[in-house]
Length: 400
Image 1 (tube, rainbow, N blue to C red):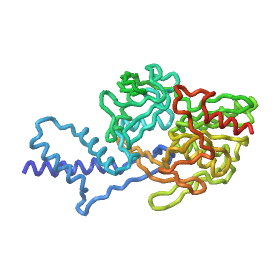
Image 2 (image 1 turned 180 degrees about the vertical axis):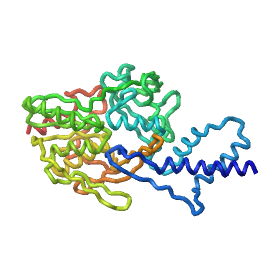
Image 3 (image 1 turned 90 degrees about the vertical axis):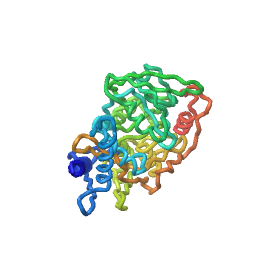
Protein backbone atom coordinates (compact mmCIF):
# COMPACT_ATOMS: atom_id res chain seq x y z
CA UNK A 1 0.00 0.00 0.00
CA UNK A 2 2.76 2.45 0.92
CA UNK A 3 4.49 1.73 -2.38
CA UNK A 4 1.25 2.26 -4.34
CA UNK A 5 0.52 5.48 -2.47
CA UNK A 6 4.05 6.75 -3.08
CA UNK A 7 3.72 5.91 -6.75
CA UNK A 8 0.43 7.85 -7.04
CA UNK A 9 1.94 10.87 -5.29
CA UNK A 10 5.03 10.78 -7.50
CA UNK A 11 2.88 10.51 -10.63
CA UNK A 12 1.00 13.65 -9.60
CA UNK A 13 4.25 15.47 -8.85
CA UNK A 14 5.79 14.41 -12.16
CA UNK A 15 2.69 15.56 -14.06
CA UNK A 16 2.86 18.96 -12.39
CA UNK A 17 6.61 19.31 -12.99
CA UNK A 18 6.52 18.27 -16.64
CA UNK A 19 3.46 20.42 -17.36
CA UNK A 20 5.18 23.39 -15.70
CA UNK A 21 8.31 22.87 -17.76
CA UNK A 22 6.37 22.65 -20.99
CA UNK A 23 3.46 25.08 -20.61
CA UNK A 24 4.41 28.25 -18.77
CA UNK A 25 6.55 30.83 -20.58
CA UNK A 26 7.77 34.25 -19.61
CA UNK A 27 6.45 37.06 -21.78
CA UNK A 28 9.74 37.97 -23.44
CA UNK A 29 11.20 35.16 -25.49
CA UNK A 30 14.03 35.14 -27.97
CA UNK A 31 14.29 33.33 -31.24
CA UNK A 32 17.72 32.06 -32.21
CA UNK A 33 17.24 33.60 -35.60
CA UNK A 34 14.30 35.93 -35.01
CA UNK A 35 13.10 37.79 -31.91
CA UNK A 36 9.42 37.29 -31.11
CA UNK A 37 7.10 38.60 -28.40
CA UNK A 38 4.95 35.62 -27.47
CA UNK A 39 4.53 31.88 -27.82
CA UNK A 40 2.65 28.99 -26.25
CA UNK A 41 3.12 25.28 -25.80
CA UNK A 42 0.23 22.95 -24.96
CA UNK A 43 0.59 19.71 -23.04
CA UNK A 44 -1.36 16.89 -24.68
CA UNK A 45 -2.79 14.49 -22.08
CA UNK A 46 -4.75 11.26 -22.12
CA UNK A 47 -8.38 11.05 -21.10
CA UNK A 48 -7.48 10.22 -17.50
CA UNK A 49 -5.34 13.35 -17.17
CA UNK A 50 -2.00 11.55 -17.49
CA UNK A 51 0.61 11.48 -20.24
CA UNK A 52 2.43 8.46 -21.63
CA UNK A 53 5.80 9.77 -20.50
CA UNK A 54 4.51 10.52 -16.99
CA UNK A 55 3.18 6.98 -16.53
CA UNK A 56 6.36 5.37 -17.80
CA UNK A 57 8.66 7.57 -15.71
CA UNK A 58 6.61 6.90 -12.58
CA UNK A 59 6.94 3.16 -13.16
CA UNK A 60 10.69 3.38 -13.73
CA UNK A 61 10.96 5.49 -10.59
CA UNK A 62 9.23 2.77 -8.58
CA UNK A 63 11.66 0.13 -9.86
CA UNK A 64 14.65 2.34 -9.01
CA UNK A 65 13.34 3.01 -5.48
CA UNK A 66 12.92 -0.70 -4.87
CA UNK A 67 16.27 -2.02 -6.10
CA UNK A 68 18.80 0.73 -7.00
CA UNK A 69 21.58 0.81 -4.40
CA UNK A 70 22.57 4.46 -4.90
CA UNK A 71 20.97 7.82 -4.16
CA UNK A 72 18.45 9.27 -6.63
CA UNK A 73 18.89 12.90 -7.69
CA UNK A 74 15.38 13.91 -8.78
CA UNK A 75 16.41 17.24 -10.32
CA UNK A 76 19.18 15.69 -12.41
CA UNK A 77 16.94 12.80 -13.48
CA UNK A 78 14.15 15.13 -14.62
CA UNK A 79 16.56 17.37 -16.58
CA UNK A 80 18.07 14.32 -18.29
CA UNK A 81 14.65 12.85 -19.03
CA UNK A 82 13.40 16.05 -20.64
CA UNK A 83 16.62 16.38 -22.68
CA UNK A 84 16.17 12.84 -23.98
CA UNK A 85 12.47 13.39 -24.67
CA UNK A 86 13.20 16.43 -26.85
CA UNK A 87 16.15 14.71 -28.55
CA UNK A 88 13.69 11.98 -29.55
CA UNK A 89 12.12 14.44 -31.98
CA UNK A 90 15.03 13.56 -34.26
CA UNK A 91 15.76 17.13 -35.36
CA UNK A 92 19.37 18.20 -34.88
CA UNK A 93 18.32 21.82 -34.21
CA UNK A 94 15.58 21.07 -31.63
CA UNK A 95 17.09 21.03 -28.15
CA UNK A 96 16.11 21.36 -24.47
CA UNK A 97 18.41 23.58 -22.37
CA UNK A 98 18.88 23.69 -18.62
CA UNK A 99 18.68 27.12 -16.99
CA UNK A 100 22.45 27.56 -17.16
CA UNK A 101 22.57 26.48 -20.80
CA UNK A 102 19.62 28.72 -21.63
CA UNK A 103 21.32 31.75 -20.07
CA UNK A 104 24.38 31.08 -22.23
CA UNK A 105 22.28 30.68 -25.38
CA UNK A 106 20.41 33.92 -24.73
CA UNK A 107 23.58 35.87 -23.97
CA UNK A 108 25.26 34.57 -27.12
CA UNK A 109 22.29 35.47 -29.34
CA UNK A 110 22.29 38.97 -27.87
CA UNK A 111 26.03 39.35 -28.37
CA UNK A 112 26.93 38.85 -24.69
CA UNK A 113 29.41 36.00 -24.87
CA UNK A 114 31.20 34.03 -22.17
CA UNK A 115 33.40 31.24 -23.48
CA UNK A 116 36.76 30.51 -25.04
CA UNK A 117 36.27 32.83 -28.03
CA UNK A 118 36.01 30.83 -31.25
CA UNK A 119 33.78 30.75 -34.29
CA UNK A 120 33.01 27.09 -34.93
CA UNK A 121 30.99 24.87 -37.24
CA UNK A 122 29.26 21.87 -35.63
CA UNK A 123 28.45 18.97 -37.97
CA UNK A 124 25.82 16.93 -36.12
CA UNK A 125 25.72 14.09 -38.64
CA UNK A 126 29.49 13.51 -38.60
CA UNK A 127 29.98 14.46 -34.95
CA UNK A 128 32.70 17.04 -35.68
CA UNK A 129 33.54 20.57 -34.59
CA UNK A 130 35.72 22.73 -36.82
CA UNK A 131 37.31 25.96 -35.64
CA UNK A 132 36.51 28.58 -38.27
CA UNK A 133 38.53 31.27 -36.53
CA UNK A 134 39.66 32.20 -33.00
CA UNK A 135 38.39 35.63 -31.97
CA UNK A 136 40.81 38.50 -31.57
CA UNK A 137 42.22 38.82 -28.03
CA UNK A 138 40.42 35.61 -27.01
CA UNK A 139 41.53 32.86 -24.59
CA UNK A 140 41.44 30.42 -27.53
CA UNK A 141 43.91 32.52 -29.51
CA UNK A 142 46.14 32.91 -26.46
CA UNK A 143 46.09 29.13 -25.94
CA UNK A 144 47.29 28.56 -29.51
CA UNK A 145 44.10 27.49 -31.31
CA UNK A 146 44.16 28.04 -35.06
CA UNK A 147 41.77 28.29 -37.98
CA UNK A 148 40.99 24.82 -39.32
CA UNK A 149 41.63 23.02 -36.03
CA UNK A 150 39.29 20.06 -35.49
CA UNK A 151 38.10 19.63 -31.90
CA UNK A 152 38.08 15.87 -31.28
CA UNK A 153 37.45 15.73 -27.53
CA UNK A 154 36.11 17.90 -24.71
CA UNK A 155 37.34 17.30 -21.18
CA UNK A 156 38.62 13.86 -22.22
CA UNK A 157 35.40 12.71 -23.93
CA UNK A 158 35.76 12.00 -27.65
CA UNK A 159 33.25 13.55 -30.03
CA UNK A 160 30.63 11.34 -31.70
CA UNK A 161 27.39 12.13 -33.58
CA UNK A 162 25.53 11.14 -30.40
CA UNK A 163 27.30 13.55 -28.03
CA UNK A 164 28.52 16.37 -30.28
CA UNK A 165 25.59 18.62 -29.36
CA UNK A 166 26.16 18.30 -25.61
CA UNK A 167 29.94 18.59 -25.90
CA UNK A 168 29.71 21.69 -28.10
CA UNK A 169 27.65 23.30 -25.32
CA UNK A 170 30.19 22.05 -22.74
CA UNK A 171 32.91 24.10 -24.45
CA UNK A 172 31.07 27.14 -23.14
CA UNK A 173 30.69 27.52 -19.40
CA UNK A 174 31.09 29.75 -16.40
CA UNK A 175 33.48 32.66 -16.48
CA UNK A 176 36.84 31.83 -14.88
CA UNK A 177 36.65 28.06 -15.43
CA UNK A 178 38.71 26.07 -17.93
CA UNK A 179 38.01 23.39 -20.53
CA UNK A 180 40.42 20.78 -21.93
CA UNK A 181 40.16 20.34 -25.70
CA UNK A 182 41.69 17.61 -27.84
CA UNK A 183 42.77 19.14 -31.15
CA UNK A 184 43.53 17.51 -34.50
CA UNK A 185 45.70 19.79 -36.65
CA UNK A 186 46.75 18.07 -39.85
CA UNK A 187 48.71 14.99 -38.76
CA UNK A 188 49.31 16.43 -35.29
CA UNK A 189 47.21 15.78 -32.20
CA UNK A 190 47.47 18.02 -29.15
CA UNK A 191 45.58 18.98 -26.00
CA UNK A 192 44.91 22.58 -25.00
CA UNK A 193 43.50 23.87 -21.74
CA UNK A 194 41.56 27.06 -22.40
CA UNK A 195 40.07 29.51 -19.93
CA UNK A 196 36.48 30.66 -20.28
CA UNK A 197 35.92 34.38 -19.86
CA UNK A 198 33.71 37.21 -21.06
CA UNK A 199 34.47 38.04 -24.67
CA UNK A 200 34.08 41.48 -26.19
CA UNK A 201 32.66 40.36 -29.51
CA UNK A 202 33.22 42.37 -32.67
CA UNK A 203 30.95 41.22 -35.48
CA UNK A 204 32.68 43.18 -38.24
CA UNK A 205 36.16 43.58 -39.71
CA UNK A 206 36.63 46.22 -42.41
CA UNK A 207 39.26 47.98 -44.48
CA UNK A 208 39.74 49.88 -47.73
CA UNK A 209 41.28 48.04 -50.68
CA UNK A 210 42.85 49.54 -53.79
CA UNK A 211 40.66 51.44 -56.27
CA UNK A 212 38.32 52.57 -53.49
CA UNK A 213 36.88 49.10 -52.87
CA UNK A 214 35.43 48.81 -49.37
CA UNK A 215 35.87 45.40 -47.74
CA UNK A 216 33.58 44.38 -44.86
CA UNK A 217 33.82 40.93 -43.28
CA UNK A 218 30.68 39.94 -41.35
CA UNK A 219 31.72 37.31 -38.80
CA UNK A 220 28.23 36.48 -37.51
CA UNK A 221 24.68 37.85 -37.34
CA UNK A 222 24.36 38.07 -33.56
CA UNK A 223 22.81 41.05 -31.79
CA UNK A 224 24.30 44.39 -32.86
CA UNK A 225 25.76 43.20 -36.20
CA UNK A 226 23.62 45.42 -38.45
CA UNK A 227 24.42 48.56 -36.45
CA UNK A 228 28.14 47.77 -36.57
CA UNK A 229 27.92 47.03 -40.31
CA UNK A 230 26.27 50.41 -40.99
CA UNK A 231 28.90 52.26 -38.96
CA UNK A 232 31.76 50.56 -40.82
CA UNK A 233 30.20 51.16 -44.23
CA UNK A 234 29.59 54.84 -43.55
CA UNK A 235 33.18 55.27 -42.38
CA UNK A 236 34.51 53.66 -45.58
CA UNK A 237 32.07 55.69 -47.68
CA UNK A 238 33.49 58.87 -46.16
CA UNK A 239 36.95 57.65 -47.20
CA UNK A 240 35.78 57.49 -50.82
CA UNK A 241 34.52 53.92 -51.27
CA UNK A 242 32.86 53.43 -54.66
CA UNK A 243 32.19 49.66 -54.44
CA UNK A 244 31.81 47.05 -51.72
CA UNK A 245 32.86 43.48 -50.93
CA UNK A 246 30.83 41.78 -48.15
CA UNK A 247 32.61 38.66 -46.91
CA UNK A 248 30.34 36.15 -45.15
CA UNK A 249 32.56 33.11 -45.66
CA UNK A 250 32.54 31.00 -42.50
CA UNK A 251 29.60 32.96 -41.09
CA UNK A 252 27.32 30.35 -39.50
CA UNK A 253 24.37 32.72 -39.02
CA UNK A 254 22.71 34.17 -35.95
CA UNK A 255 19.65 36.39 -35.50
CA UNK A 256 17.56 36.70 -38.67
CA UNK A 257 16.51 40.26 -37.82
CA UNK A 258 20.14 41.35 -38.09
CA UNK A 259 20.34 39.97 -41.65
CA UNK A 260 17.01 41.62 -42.51
CA UNK A 261 18.23 44.97 -41.17
CA UNK A 262 21.34 44.71 -43.35
CA UNK A 263 19.27 43.79 -46.40
CA UNK A 264 17.13 46.88 -45.86
CA UNK A 265 20.26 48.98 -46.33
CA UNK A 266 20.66 47.55 -49.84
CA UNK A 267 17.34 46.31 -51.27
CA UNK A 268 14.53 48.50 -52.60
CA UNK A 269 11.75 49.54 -50.24
CA UNK A 270 8.75 47.13 -50.32
CA UNK A 271 10.82 44.39 -51.98
CA UNK A 272 10.48 40.86 -50.57
CA UNK A 273 13.45 39.79 -48.45
CA UNK A 274 12.35 36.44 -47.03
CA UNK A 275 9.44 33.99 -47.13
CA UNK A 276 8.79 31.84 -44.04
CA UNK A 277 6.43 28.85 -43.90
CA UNK A 278 5.20 27.22 -40.67
CA UNK A 279 4.07 23.63 -40.04
CA UNK A 280 0.52 24.42 -41.22
CA UNK A 281 1.67 25.87 -44.52
CA UNK A 282 1.01 29.46 -43.45
CA UNK A 283 3.35 31.92 -45.15
CA UNK A 284 4.88 35.07 -43.76
CA UNK A 285 6.39 37.38 -46.36
CA UNK A 286 8.96 39.79 -44.96
CA UNK A 287 9.46 42.95 -47.01
CA UNK A 288 11.85 45.86 -46.74
CA UNK A 289 10.32 48.80 -44.90
CA UNK A 290 13.17 51.26 -45.42
CA UNK A 291 14.81 53.26 -48.19
CA UNK A 292 18.23 51.75 -48.99
CA UNK A 293 21.41 53.67 -48.15
CA UNK A 294 23.92 51.58 -50.14
CA UNK A 295 23.84 52.05 -53.91
CA UNK A 296 27.34 50.98 -55.00
CA UNK A 297 28.29 47.77 -56.87
CA UNK A 298 28.48 44.85 -54.42
CA UNK A 299 30.14 41.43 -54.38
CA UNK A 300 29.28 38.93 -51.63
CA UNK A 301 31.81 36.20 -50.82
CA UNK A 302 30.41 32.83 -49.63
CA UNK A 303 31.61 29.28 -48.97
CA UNK A 304 30.38 25.98 -47.59
CA UNK A 305 30.39 27.35 -44.05
CA UNK A 306 28.12 30.30 -44.88
CA UNK A 307 24.88 29.16 -43.24
CA UNK A 308 21.42 30.15 -42.09
CA UNK A 309 21.15 33.96 -41.76
CA UNK A 310 24.12 34.22 -44.14
CA UNK A 311 22.11 32.32 -46.74
CA UNK A 312 19.09 34.55 -46.18
CA UNK A 313 21.33 37.56 -46.81
CA UNK A 314 23.09 36.16 -49.90
CA UNK A 315 19.91 34.65 -51.34
CA UNK A 316 17.93 37.89 -51.23
CA UNK A 317 20.76 39.90 -52.80
CA UNK A 318 21.17 37.30 -55.54
CA UNK A 319 17.44 37.15 -56.34
CA UNK A 320 17.13 40.95 -56.51
CA UNK A 321 20.39 41.21 -58.48
CA UNK A 322 21.77 43.63 -55.90
CA UNK A 323 25.08 41.78 -55.64
CA UNK A 324 27.24 39.25 -57.45
CA UNK A 325 27.75 36.14 -55.31
CA UNK A 326 31.25 34.67 -55.60
CA UNK A 327 32.78 31.58 -53.97
CA UNK A 328 31.38 28.10 -53.43
CA UNK A 329 27.91 26.74 -52.61
CA UNK A 330 26.68 27.61 -49.12
CA UNK A 331 25.91 25.20 -46.27
CA UNK A 332 22.16 24.68 -46.81
CA UNK A 333 20.42 25.49 -43.51
CA UNK A 334 17.01 26.82 -44.46
CA UNK A 335 15.08 26.42 -41.22
CA UNK A 336 14.47 28.84 -38.36
CA UNK A 337 14.58 27.95 -34.66
CA UNK A 338 12.51 29.59 -31.95
CA UNK A 339 14.18 29.83 -28.54
CA UNK A 340 11.62 29.80 -25.73
CA UNK A 341 12.46 30.51 -22.10
CA UNK A 342 10.32 28.48 -19.67
CA UNK A 343 9.09 29.57 -16.24
CA UNK A 344 11.92 27.85 -14.32
CA UNK A 345 14.60 29.50 -16.49
CA UNK A 346 15.23 26.48 -18.71
CA UNK A 347 14.52 26.68 -22.42
CA UNK A 348 13.39 24.91 -25.55
CA UNK A 349 14.86 25.59 -28.99
CA UNK A 350 12.77 24.10 -31.76
CA UNK A 351 12.54 24.33 -35.52
CA UNK A 352 9.38 26.30 -36.27
CA UNK A 353 9.65 27.58 -39.85
CA UNK A 354 11.30 26.77 -43.16
CA UNK A 355 12.33 29.69 -45.30
CA UNK A 356 13.05 30.36 -48.93
CA UNK A 357 14.47 33.24 -50.93
CA UNK A 358 12.33 36.01 -52.49
CA UNK A 359 12.14 33.98 -55.73
CA UNK A 360 10.91 30.99 -53.67
CA UNK A 361 14.14 29.05 -53.97
CA UNK A 362 14.50 26.56 -51.12
CA UNK A 363 17.73 26.59 -49.13
CA UNK A 364 17.49 23.73 -46.64
CA UNK A 365 19.93 20.94 -47.54
CA UNK A 366 20.39 22.68 -50.91
CA UNK A 367 22.32 25.89 -50.30
CA UNK A 368 22.87 28.98 -52.43
CA UNK A 369 24.76 28.57 -55.68
CA UNK A 370 27.10 31.52 -56.35
CA UNK A 371 26.88 33.52 -59.57
CA UNK A 372 30.58 32.83 -60.06
CA UNK A 373 32.12 29.68 -58.59
CA UNK A 374 35.70 30.09 -57.38
CA UNK A 375 37.54 27.53 -55.24
CA UNK A 376 40.31 28.38 -52.79
CA UNK A 377 43.57 26.52 -53.44
CA UNK A 378 43.64 23.46 -51.17
CA UNK A 379 47.36 23.53 -50.43
CA UNK A 380 47.45 26.95 -48.73
CA UNK A 381 49.08 27.03 -45.29
CA UNK A 382 47.66 30.49 -44.71
CA UNK A 383 45.13 32.53 -46.68
CA UNK A 384 46.36 36.05 -47.47
CA UNK A 385 44.88 38.84 -49.51
CA UNK A 386 47.26 37.98 -52.36
CA UNK A 387 46.54 34.23 -52.56
CA UNK A 388 42.83 34.47 -51.73
CA UNK A 389 41.48 33.53 -55.16
CA UNK A 390 37.88 34.31 -54.19
CA UNK A 391 38.74 37.78 -52.93
CA UNK A 392 40.90 38.47 -55.99
CA UNK A 393 38.03 37.42 -58.28
CA UNK A 394 35.74 39.82 -56.40
CA UNK A 395 38.23 42.67 -56.86
CA UNK A 396 38.49 41.81 -60.57
CA UNK A 397 34.69 41.87 -60.89
CA UNK A 398 34.40 45.30 -59.27
CA UNK A 399 37.26 46.74 -61.35
CA UNK A 400 35.50 45.93 -64.65
